[in-house]
Length: 552
Ligand code: BGC
Image (cartoon, rainbow, N blue to C red):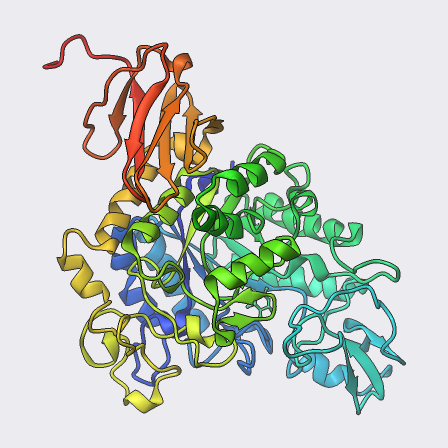
């Protein structure tokens, strides 16, 4: 067991979210697998990401794409084996890539052996692993998360002749964390994978572990207490591993998941994500600045995970009702683009495939505090397919090349787990890794350059942030400072060229050098710094001491 001082690698990481089933098929059954992923590690290393987050890979009936686990100690046979997983972590580590996977803690699949046995009723040793009731009236204040498909958090079990509790699909019964056996079993599951070389977990659906009458059954103190137990396990035996919380909550509740540095190392910044889109749509920095000013500082050793898109709908739970209406109207004018309380579209279609806006969103993401998480395929601007069910439209096969099945699989096209995108704009022959690698000005090459620039300067990952009071609200200007390194980033959120004055007087006499290319801008003086940005442009600078002479 590796014991030592944590290296805090997560503070400077760039995550890449891999949907293993959709990434690369190595055995031509039409489904991506671990061996396929291994064959693509060189690509990921060159992209410049530093940690892979694998979506669920454990045995599952796949009624929620693996978020319905039927065996916590086995890899789903369609994806590979435990031995493949160990090979993957070794191969990734050899390329200095970390690997984390989803740990689905709050529920199991109804097909899990525990639930199958529990259904026998109170005489089963596993009955207490789940939450049962004679009626469906308890915990009435808990919201329904998948409100498009479920109308209650209770489902009837005809065999136990009782209702069981579920926060997601009815086929995902919630585990009963009030039972110590459940807590111990989940800690044992963690240990099993930690011993196999994993670098941590993205812990799924964290807020819902406990239930208590008269509450929303979210963020309860009991839930935090169990999260601290998970952290203790990491601290005691695997100190270089991390826990990343999926807690889709308002800032005040979300920040609690860091504890005092004794709970999660990281948490997704759900409140920030929709506000990045809102700021760009409204051409106003307000939504971004307001939410970041409202978010308390994270404890030392902790870090946000920031993101633009993921495998779920673009969730709009952490915005007000009018803001949600505005987002839906702006980004999802067709009913099929909507799901639950969100929008099931990928980054490029959300931005109308406008390269300038896509770059702007990435630029904003990379300039803000937190470790960015890139969703597979969004580095090349893949499209979505809103005519597929549930969230499948944002999980179509990775587009590697213009070859058969986009280079994803050699299987018959009809065997693929999901159809490849062949729509007019996002067709795999137009949007694929291969062609973008060969086009110097492609989105992929641009992003690679930006990621390399970001990881080379810790001001972006660890630095304090200060928003500058630009005279023009279309301008989002900020500095990041860390150990004497000062970065200045200016974004134009508008579709028009925009002028602005910036008060940079505290940096008087320093010279802005463009981060890429080190081209020099005029030195900063006591006067307001005047600058004009072209539509949706971002300027990235390091502020440096003037050199003795222009030639030096
Ligand atoms: C995951 C979803 C999943 C749900 C239930 C989430 O929060 O991100 O994809 O459907 O948990 O496990």
